[in-house]
Image (cartoon, rainbow, N blue to C red; front, side, top):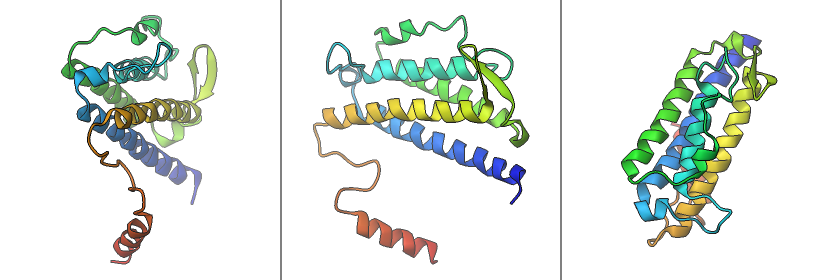
Length: 181
């Protein structure tokens, strides 16, 4: 397989991976009420609401005009992302979707042969591929925090977002069965 085909596969896979993390976060947001979305474990921890504002703020800054301007925009108020300023789940979901829409719009604009092009984030040059990987790690880190908070606050038995405890063998059998059809 040539490099161009590998790069196309990478772009397809990275979009699928970002959508997976978007789904994990959104499922947790949907499961929580507004009080739970605002819950903070301690003074140095962040609520789901804060994490969503930060993830989205990062996405909007990083992926707006990503190829032609620094990913840390002058208009971004990063510190403001860590302040409580939303009242409803609808406001939170609108912010969440705005960030993802900008991210996916940017990813859709990238051609496979651009992955080695240089862009700038906070004055640091990096390839588009490096920037994508950097942001995937950042978003998955915070979405893991969202999942942890949602699971900790769940009053009902937690409906797993992946393979349930004790169900690995059955899951693997089902996967083998699907691939042999």
